[in-house]
Amino acid sequence: MRAHLGDQLVVESPATGVARRDGEIVGLHHDDGTPPYDVRWSDTDQVSLVFPGPDAHVRHMGHSTPPSGHGDPPSAHGAPAAAGTASPAAPAAGASAAGDIGRRVAVERRRRGLSREETAGRARMSPDYLAYLEEHPADPTLATLVRLADALGTTVAALRGGGAGLAPGRGHALLHPRLRDLGPEECRALLSTHGVGRVAVTAPDGRPAVVPVNYEVVDDTIAFRTAPGSVPAAAVGTDVAFEVDHLDEALSQGWSVLAVGPASAVTDPDAARRLTGGAYGEPWAGGEREMWVSIRPARLTGRRISPGP
Picture 1 (cartoon, rainbow, N blue to C red):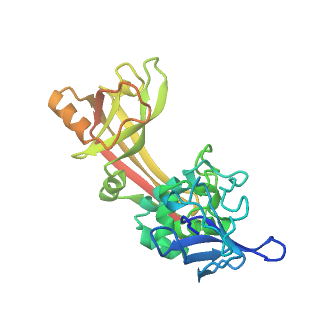
Picture 2 (picture 1 turned 30 degrees about the vertical axis):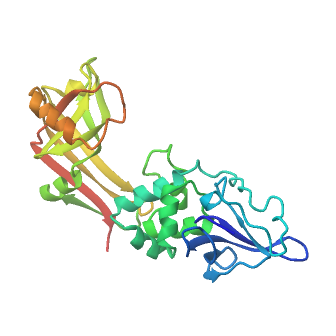
Picture 3 (picture 1 turned 135 degrees about the horizontal axis):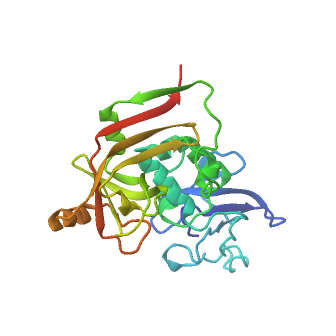
């Protein structure tokens, strides 16, 4: 018997062949995936060390073969395992595409500055299983998602991507919100070194426009890449507003920072090369975007909404 983290251990009734108990394998004690296993039982949500007997088999979740390419060995009587006991389980109805949940968990964990060990401790799971979940296709149980959402201060729906196509801020307001102004230093810290912000410009057709852009912060200057003739390029030679924010849907709190100042094109080839070489990634919009625009904030303000006394 061999298993991956995230597989299910199923214990059947010897008389009827019906599953009496099942659980998620959250810990391996051998690199080749052989027993014993740490199993979180679905009926009690408790983890125990299990040495599977002849009435147990592994249901491989999202894997065509067990570790090392080996199938389950013959039973104790030398007969092949029952047909279908080692085949991959079909994804649950409505499950997210393979790997999406793990990627959302990893992003949320890093955003909150948590290590895998800290997150696993909060969620009462094995760090090895959390690493597996973040790096491989998996369909964790609802109980696992509830614990992860609680550990990360978010919701199961958010980890499943249920709100991915919705505008943020649909949650209820805090009962006693506190709105306070942010000082320049805190604004600079929140503006950070890179991310996605919105630049407000007057478009070439004379109409106002607000456009999201990937940006960097270099020496207190905000810089973003675009294409000549595009809407963001209209910022050059004008005073513009640039805004970044973050909303925590689970806690109904967040912050926003607004920078106002003149925008100019980066025309020095060396300066443009340094910006390109130091960029954290390519613009999400894709395409040829070799024109750098810099904004030097003349005014930097911000606000934060948090729970009041």
